[in-house]
Structure formats: structure tokens, C-alpha cells
Length: 430
Ligand code: SF4
Ligand code: SF4
Image 1 (cartoon, rainbow, N blue to C red):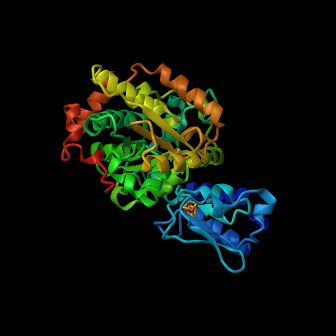
Image 2 (cartoon, rainbow, N blue to C red):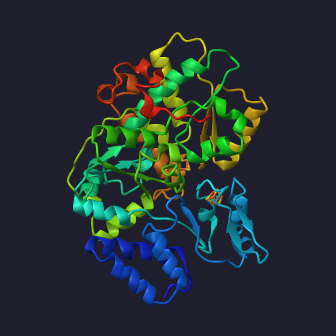
Image 3 (cartoon, protein in one colour):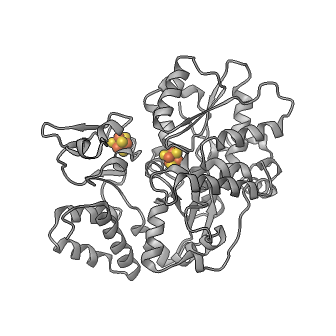
């Protein structure tokens, strides 16, 4: 068993452990895997149960022959934007963890399944079963359209509750909040024609590239947390003692949640694919759940999930707030890692004809994330439809957002620029 060490075997082990954890016998299942006598399976069990270095997301499970480039045309070394993958004298892959941002690009291309990302759900199951503290699932804006068309947000919420979660919150609601903040930041930072601002801090690959490679651009980053972090902090502010689990389309978010200055916000990260497997293994069919609706986000927050959405959301909001403002948003979007590199390089060289830079580490944006279930076209279509179904275009006209802000201690949107009142939404990149 597990001789081929394939991803499906890693996934199979994950599913076995999830089932065992719900039955309360995860340790026995790990022992059973160990008795099968396969060293790789042992390591899969370790990382599939959330073990390993707590600050690390990507792990090497076994040596590889190094012949994958010829076989598959994919190369983990070349995929790494941060020079963190090297080969030793025998051609085996070595990850230089000091350089690694945890973006997961190497895991995506590793067809030998020598590299895997940690799965964080098994330790959460105990909390879900104990019900001693509320555990919230917060779903990335790309969630819509990931699963079967009949699975509405209300049914998905009911399915998460059946798993033991206290509730499901759409991160889009906090993307709305960040949209307001980013519009104010643009108004503050871009006051001359040659000024520019880097946004889209929702993508960890984009901001890791700026922080690690294009450091001279850091002063142009707006000092905002990602919607994921804002949502986690917002929930913990309103529900002291709560735990928060983010559900999204990529490995990179697992790494973002562990960053020192923001690690208070989110306790675990699951991917859309993992959630699909979890529902399957515990026998929950979200399509058959009753409706449990609670959708209050605006078009602005909902379209963050696809490339260009962040620019449009903030531009619409800026125009709504200050229609007479002379300097409008002139946006450029970097779509995928290659594009991000080019746009950042050109920005550094002063060759960009734009005052607002948005970057997405995946082509198409989060709907194109490596752990999505739906393809990028379906995801984009559903995100746009869901965006147009919202009751308000921008958060300015969304009474739910304004009400939520008051509960979070922001009585007036200008207080986003007050470092004390808006502390939970501020990130210092300098
Ligand atoms: S996770 Fe990303 S940064 Fe780390 S080694 Fe892999 S590709 Fe490089
Ligand atoms: S663009 Fe890709 S890497 Fe960036 S947050 Fe979205 S899914 Fe993750």
C-alpha cells in the first residue's frame, strides 16, 4: 500500500484521519498506518494530521529522482519565486526554509508528490466535537461556484454547522470593510499625478514578492491587513474566545495565517478541495441541507475573488465617496506570478502608467487558486453573477457593513485613518 506515494494517497490518508478523528480514534488510525511499514505513509500521516514544525506549511516527504522536469515539463526549482528550492549533489530537492514564503507553488508542480502542504483540519475536529468554544468557518470570496450550482451560500452554511462549526461568515463582508479603508488610503496617499499605491494585500504571494524581492516598493503598500485577517480579528472581537478557520483556494493562505504580526487572527486554514473531501468522508451532502441564509456583502467585496475585482471595488467606492475628486484610480492588474514579477519590476523602474497596482499570484485571481474545486471560467462567472446579485454596489450604501463597523468600534469611515480605532485593520509593512 502507498508504494506510489501519490497525492491521492496523501489525500486518502487525510480522509482516513478525518473519519477517525470524528470517531475519536485518530491515534489508533495513525498507528495502523505506521504498522503498514511505509516511511512515506508515516510522513503523510504526520502532515495530514497537522503535525510537523508549527511555523512551516510546505514539507519535503521523500527524496526524488530529479527526473521530473524531463517527464512532466514542470520544475519545482523554477516555480519558486524566492529561490528557496535547490538541488543537492544527488539531484534531490532541498527547501531552504529561511527563503521559503510558503506560497505552495512548488507543491503545485511536484508530480512525484515529494512535497506536500500541511493539512490543518484534524486538530480542529476536537474543538468542533467538544463545542466548548465557538468555531467559525470564514469562507473566501471565491467560495461561490466552487461546489455544485444547487449549493447556495445558505446550504453551505448549514453544512458547516453540521460539521460542528458555530457559523459561517463570508470574508466578502470584510473585503467590503477593507474596500472602504483602501479608498481612504488612496485618497491619503495619491495626491499627485505621479503618486502610486500598491494594494491587493489579500494575496500573500503578491505581498511576499514585494517584501522579499522588490523591497523598495514597500513604502507604496497601503498599510492594511487582508480581508481574511480582518474577518478573523473582527469575529474574535465580537465573540471573545472564538476560534476561526479560514476556507480558501490556496496553500499560500496557510502561510499568511502563521505570520508573526497577524497570527492572532486565524487558527487554521482549509482549502476548498479539503472541505469537499471532508464533506464526502463524513457523509454530508451540502446540496441536501436546508437554507440558512445570511448574505450581506456588497458587489465590491464579492468580486475580490477574480483579477480586477479589487481595483473595480475600490475605484467604485472612491467615486461614490468623492465623485468630484480629480485624480481617479488608474489601475493595472498583475495576473499570475510572471505578470506580478513584470509589473513590480516596471514599477520599480518608474515605467508604470498607473496609480493603483493590484496583484494576484494565480492567473484569474483566487478563482484560479491551486486548491479550487471549480475551473477558473466557472468560478469567474459565478463570482460576477453573485456580485451583481448584491443589494448594494459599494459598502458605502450597505447598511449591514456600516452597522458591523459600529460594532467594531468605527463610528465614521474617516476613523480608518485613526491608528488606534482602526488597529485591527492596520498592518505595518515597513
Ligand atoms: S513554498 Fe513557495 S517559496 Fe517555499 S519553496 Fe515552495 S515555491 Fe518556494
Ligand atoms: S491569487 Fe492565488 S495565491 Fe493569491 S490569495 Fe488568491 S488563491 Fe491565494
